[in-house]
Amino acid sequence: MRDAVAELFGTGRNFAALATVMDDGSPHAVSIWSGVEGDRIVFFTSPASRKGRNIARDPRVALTVVDGENPYRTARVRGEVVETFDGDRAMEIVDRMSERYTGRPFPMRDSTVYVVEVAHEEFEELPFDP
Image 1: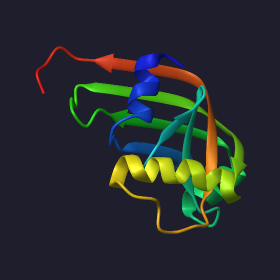
Image 2: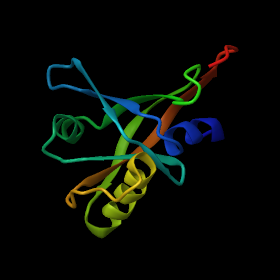
Image 3: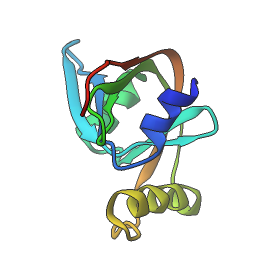
């Protein structure tokens, strides 16, 4: 993953949009917090959520993120969820994201982390002042 893409998904308080595939083939999109672990994008949710159920059936996802400081910097990726985990390992990642977005640990202690292997990435920076 290019540094600029990893920066947008893994630093600051940039909200990402996650798209998954519904059982009828239609898209489902939702705003999420994101992070980067190594060369993979991570996010968390409950497996019982709509996005969790969609991913369990079809692991293909697309994500886009806009730089909160400069909305003319964006990144888009496509890939698939290749791993999930929960417990202490997940909560370490969830708490790091929560600290970044809110300044404190995440209050709920039962999240599952989803790991996205990026297959395609794009980064765009338009020449406009924010």
